[in-house]
Amino acid sequence: MNRQSHTDEPGGTSLDLATVRSLFPCLQQQIHGNPLVYLDSAATTQKPISVLEAMDGYYREYCSNIHRGIHTLSERATAKYEDVRNKVAALLRAPDPRSVVFTSGTTEAINLVARTIGRERVGSGDEVLISAMEHHANIVPWQMLCEEQGATLRVIPCSDEGDLILDDLVDLISEKTRIVAIGHVSNAIGTVNDIKRIIHSAREMGALTVVDAAQSVPHMNIDVEDLGCDFLAFSGHKVYGPTGSGVLWGRLELLEAMKPWQGGGDMIRTVSFEKTTYADVPLKFEAGTPDIAAVIGLGAALDFVNEIGLDAIYAHEKELLDEAVAKLDQVSGVQIVGRPNQRASSISFVLDGVHPHDVGTILDQKGVAVRAGHHCAMPLMKRFGLVATIRASFGVYSESEDVDSLVEAIDEVKVIFR
Ligand code: PMP
Image (cartoon, rainbow, N blue to C red):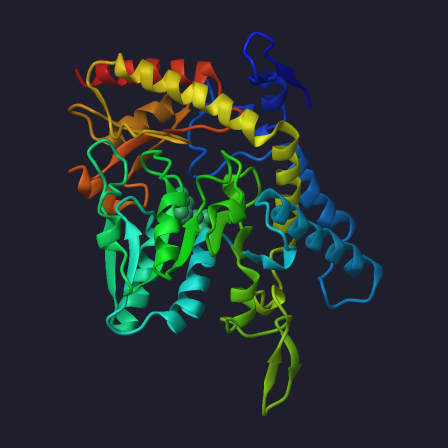
């Protein structure tokens, strides 16, 4: 794949967008007679051909179960699967691939932490701290844990601009705080949170830290050592990989000390009716046959991302986000929800007098795919006095024309509702 350099912008790079876009079969189609304008990458990204071929290759050429077989196909599949662990470790700058656990996605990864070390560490009277802009996947598992253990869920508030208010962090994090679980980037309004600061405060009080990186891994470089977190979760399908693939990274010494959560094949060393001993990490947390094809597809997705480079992806998307904010601000009746200090991935807005679902439905008629609803962040919607917004979200293949199509389609919605 080609990447062109901007010689006029020091250090800047731009993507060869035509080539990038040509790698995504799903983008090459018309919806209701209009070219597809895909602005829903925060929900899931489209998949490049290399990912589709990697999955197809597994099913056509070496379909077999992993870790157990001694035959050639199984050895090939196991080697491919385990190589993806190395790729994920490299992506997260994690020193040891054994600290990478494959899950079905961010949701499963967070539930794994809540149900294992969460149950061990959180007791009656303790506190778990999250933020006002979490996705339900980073609220409900902690709420369930708190209910079960008699603990209290506390929340870092959000400003009118859509930034977390961190001035009172010292009051929010105390010796009662056992876990701090924070989203890196808000899927609903695009805020990039200062998670390093939050992690630092949490660690000072001895709390475990969990990062929901579902919306940051696809857009920016992550270094788990530099962040200083204990756990970090992301979903393969939001980073150009298949659905069914996801990752929990955890500090090795914590993972080693944790009890398994699901029992079954592959996670054991020995089983008798009297006693079972468990496999070492990470297999201890990977009971049963995983989604092998999805993990192999995730490996191809990470190769794709690495080839372009997350710095280039971030720069490209930032340019588009800035352009989209500027152009949406020019559209009368459009109110952007949240003006965070740093934004990645998404812009949420409402259109005066028209329900977001109606906007979304009419945009779809024009070929423009956006998300309309609460974005699995109902408490954040409530914070802004809304029940729903329209969300446009970007990926590496998004282009300036997509922003123009969005604005034109909104103008047409306004004509219909005039
Ligand atoms: N956290 C965030 C911030 C998300 O955006 C999402 C997906 N929308 C999730 C968690 C849950 O991811 P998944 O459904 O892939 O498990």
